[in-house]
Image 1 (cartoon, rainbow, N blue to C red):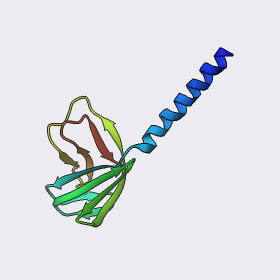
Image 2: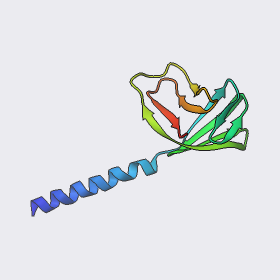
Image 3: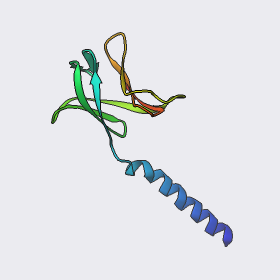
Image 4: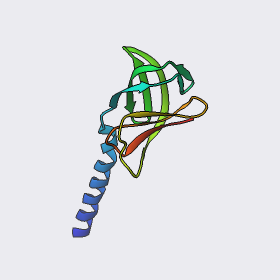
Length: 110
């Protein structure tokens, strides 16, 4: 009888733990892109943008207008980033965004 109670408690704890990512709030940050770049399939000019990340979907806005959308994923790095930065590859594609004081970065799908 006691074993069944423990098993039910563990099942409940596992179910609650799996819902925590669903309750996570979207992440929003102002970013500066220093040169023309590509986010997803959209060319973006240099300037200041609002980056909103909800789960694996990133939305880039200029004012109230959505400029670009792309999929990606969060990854952890060994060290904290010293500043907010946008990493652009040789082909002009935005590869990742780093956030000041955080070890996690958002890596865009190619």
